[in-house]
Length: 382
Image (cartoon, rainbow, N blue to C red; front, side):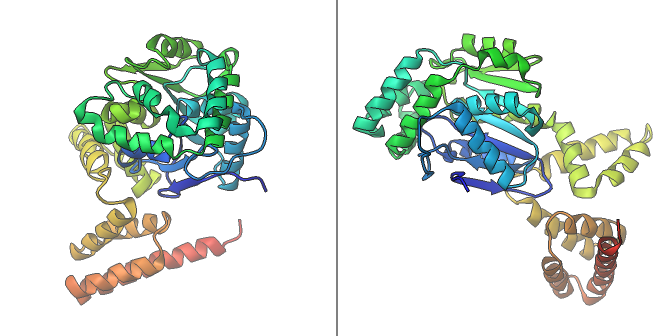
């Protein structure tokens, strides 16, 4: 089996998958500023490029096709049939290739600070030769000037130090391999064949992929949106995380209200939410909107607790408040979202101590009924 590299796959198994592909010379830590914003909504797959973050380097010259095939092998191994793809610079080239050659695997696409063909491809071949001879540490000063709008500003000292060390830690052969991939990339003629809804994100101060190049890429992809962030250079997601995150969330999951509604459906079940919305009247319509925006769009999306913890806390509170109908619904959907019977048992035992034996007794009866129905449904022939 081929080496499929180093990756991290995190989040609720029932959530849509987002693949995050970083830039040349950075590890998956380049996405640290996006994790808290994306994790409430998605299952995140971060994959390292060859020679980056401890990943091995395949034999032969590097190419975007080879990187794309490597990604296809990874998502096949993980059982991901279809995903959103967010690619930064080199990662964006891989995202383009995947969207063109495997359109059935890409739901929505975000291309950040990337052009289908980078200017001066020969310079990347020369960089590959140089880094093989001198190592990635020799690239640090030039890279920081490209990656950040004001790398010498005192306020940026910590982040520049961190990314300098990150680049210096990249394996020379892996960096050179990826340089060869950038040098040989020319996906311009293919952009018209991208069918995935696409957002192109650029940095107004990016000297690698200028706003003009980002605009040209967006125009070449049918129906693509364009968002150029002021004040950002090549690692625009690092310099402008809040604006970048909101742009990505809106493209992948909709407005805050739409995201809250999707979260509500994911936690409570499609049928329940559809019934609630269908039963809304002029009197209750505003309350349904409030539900989408506040508890589901804001509180359930806060990064301080993961979704598993929020589910268990909610079950405990519904026991204590004697809300049997809501409790049964939350138990049923929690068991379908990765909460185990053992975890449910512990939570209900905890409520026996702090909410009282009668409340826990009723809750155990409800939970047992839900589990038995699940077992009967699983045993029933198709």
